[in-house]
Length: 160
Image (cartoon, rainbow, N blue to C red):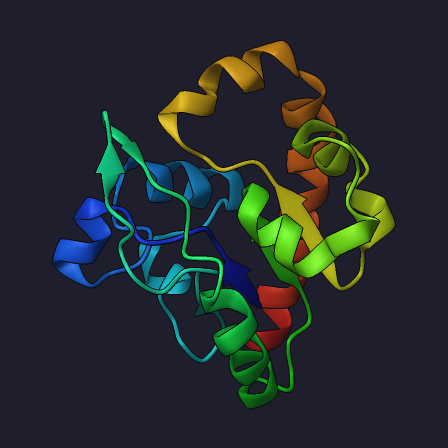
């Protein structure tokens, strides 16, 4: 499995551990996955669209540098030929990988997740800022998360 996020946040930048923050806790909760499995490099590759910490403005992380994904993502994918599923976590990952196939909004793209299977599974970013989004879109927990969990569980079982 390949997890593509946005760019490292401050805490991840400082520790060097991807998703080592509250957003990572939420993502692992969505996946129903413990840290040992999540960080098992034999099963899961974690690479953001932006490899460097972009900094913040007024408490919000800046977007990933636009030149990063086209330079590095093809190289990572070429080095990982057995990817069964790519999780596209957040708008920037979806923009890069889905391009014109993306819907008009992140919400519409996530809601149409089945259109992108079996290769991709678009997700919102699990940031605390998106709690209001999840509350406005109860179908995410009701429809998307169970489908995500089934797919991830099957992949992890085969890779174990």
